[in-house]
Picture 1 (cartoon, rainbow, N blue to C red):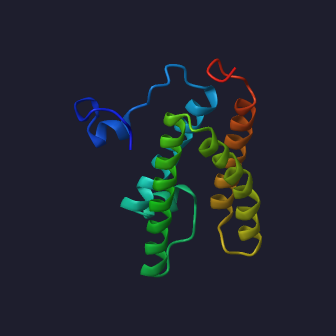
Picture 2: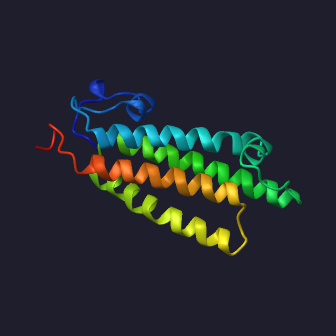
Length: 151
């Protein structure tokens, strides 16, 4: 808990959406936030109507309500991962941003392995593998660019 008087504390929802006290934001923090918005945009259609991303990714039709429900759950997870990326980027939390780099380096090989096992459709595997590979390469480069805030 912060040691600020109650009269100076922001309401919880404003504090959640605030960027923080960092006037200078790093490029990797901004990029992580932007990637988070991308995950949110990917996850929302999956939550609302799983048929939209299924058609866009040229996946086979869902065979059972359980498959539809699992895809909705996947959309919800993508949404929440995006939300955490947004918060990590906005707060300039270096350990959280570094954590997003580690997980994004792991996603493409795991996704492609699931495709080889026949558990994912080709376009789904390609979309996530290529997208995450491009994002992690960019974020890794930005990680090593010194920011004015940390130098």
